[in-house]
Image (tube, rainbow, N blue to C red):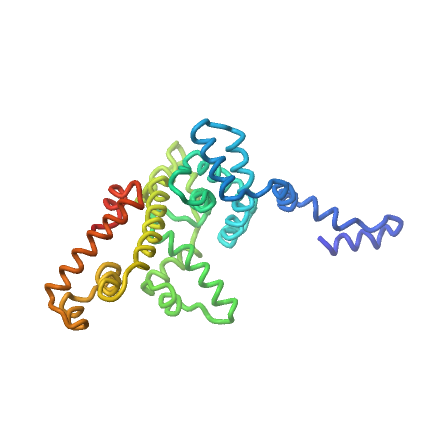
Length: 310
């Protein structure tokens, strides 16, 4: 755009050069940024007070303030996703804003976590759904694992190429921890013939390809609840861990929180105690942990059912 403007200035010297700062201000994204900067951020206390007012009294003004104070969060998250969606950034922001409004409706201020943390899950969920619904390269039959590879493959290839490294299937399979054949298959999908999911199955059919896409995903609400529960559980487990020392700390780390636990005998040999004594310590530790979580987490029964066995 700059060269055209220079040519016009050369051809019509009587006209003063355009005010470039004014031209920049006409960009929709910059105008939007200037607009949302007018809304003040909220303190943790203000955020909780507004959330309670909205939840208990359905105060629309409180909901409005929660939304406007977090519009910059939507922009930040949308810009993180722009590498996958190289078209209009405002589309991502718009979808993220819808997710933000949904977060306000669903947020429970009595659980003790920040609204912005909770809202980020909803914002990301709506942006991801928009990208998946609109990207032409999404192919029929794509599974959840393939969709994850779809995004990670593009991201990793760009990272390697930016470093001047050839993104070979073998290297990519090593970096992404997947089979080389899966890398080759997905790369072929990225470069193969495109099909519109909104196109009809046949010329005279009203059914589209999208109607027959399989979906193994949990509902968005369930996905967010699962992530939220895992985050809360991890935080509480780490706080509980800080209280432990000696044998209990080792049992907690090497028996309860690891995918490859030590045997009771191995821990017994380490501390010079019997296998039965280690089992007793572990049993007592589990009881203490369960009591701690029941006191700290209101919905511990649901959390245990979906995440852990204590």
